[in-house]
Length: 127
Image (tube, helix red, strand yellow):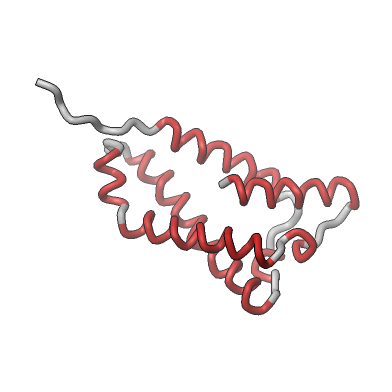
């Protein structure tokens, strides 16, 4: 989340300073390779271990599960754009989003982080 947050912060700062933004100027291959790797790792965990997650954090509410799947969708939907950039140097997957998407998604990231900190890990019952 922090890597994505910083990427969007720089994107927003570029727009505010220059009146335009070019993702190719801030999305660097080495940094994006690390970000894409983390996203793939997270996507695998989120997709294949969701039942374990729901059990570990006593996730019974529908709203908590919906937020989980929104986060999962966002991460999974971003992966093709990162791979497209890494393989072809093409940011067109992300160019669909205007500059004002950055402050919106940065706010959403903050809510994602709050969501994760609000989770309560289930503990074994003590007798």
